[in-house]
Length: 129
Length: 364
Image (cartoon, rainbow over all chains, first blue to last red; front, side, top):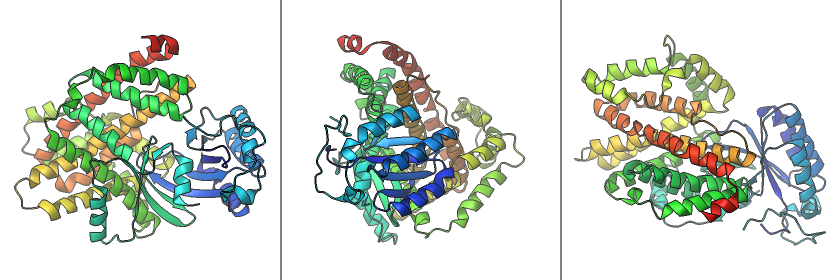
């Protein structure tokens, strides 16, 4: 995925977070999309959401995930399709730091195709060879 | 969010379209139209994730089928039907684990597995044999069709064309069906014996000796736990049931009364428990990759949730049950040794690979 595109987090949480995610989707309709999905192999986690990151949304998403982790809930996280191993507060902080430059844009631009200036090179950018 | 964006954000896509597959999706879409599902559009992906799913985004419902999953099933069927050497299973498993490691971002570890895969690939020949070709292809087709139909049933629940009350009733029915039985094994034996009175004790014991799915540790308590803890378990069972019924009806329309009908029906039905076995293996390989990525202990090959669904499938089949089918399924399920083969063949090498540094692996 090119570095100038917004990073997307695919988050899976337990059903305890349903209300929280619904409110976030109302607040950030262009960036937070709750999804309802069924897959053949099933899943242990009932709530799923795609969050297109912007500087404004990032701390809010961080808070939701950290609260779930502190409540000892299982959390699954993917960035642009790549699964994050061992989701913890520490790894989450690192991820947020890494994603900040590429997400330096206004929330409304999340879906826009217009390229945004990169502050510095994106360390991962979600790109995969 | 569009379905295209969703697929891009959630998958390691290889391509948006895919090479030809054994399963004819266009023909399937025609079948759906003929059955009245005119508005259902199938989105085809070809991704390392191998995920077929139904997804609701911004109030719209999409049915997605991944052709790479079909290829995986075909390869597992190849190994199941033709392979005579344990290394075939290890070869393919190392490829699957390598891909899963890539998806978990553990690229260096993945290289070790791909290297092992490459070193074995040339040497493995037995799985490439094409005896039993017709039955293997029929099995893969039936399995891929089952996957799509299973997701279609979810689609119908999502779009409220199937009554959600059915799900509650299914959960109650599952709980009730175990009443008075010690465990699933006990119950399975009773209904197999009732439905196959012609089967002599010798054949029965011969076919049951491996206790392929080992239902003995599944009881009412465990089922209740699964119903409470696994979201949508009853819905999954209902969708399995819908898929099987649809497949039987389709075959009835095509071939009922023809000479090969009975054999085809048996193969189509027996393909489903084999699919569950494949799903269990793929889940297990995925867990192995995640554990290797995290440096945590390797998991055992055991999945109560899948086994509960196999048990439910047995129940669903009661109307079609015959001694002939029983033997067919038992012969297939004896192939569960095949999954044990995966386990035994892989456990030691995996441990060695994990303990070996990559340069040593590459230098082999």
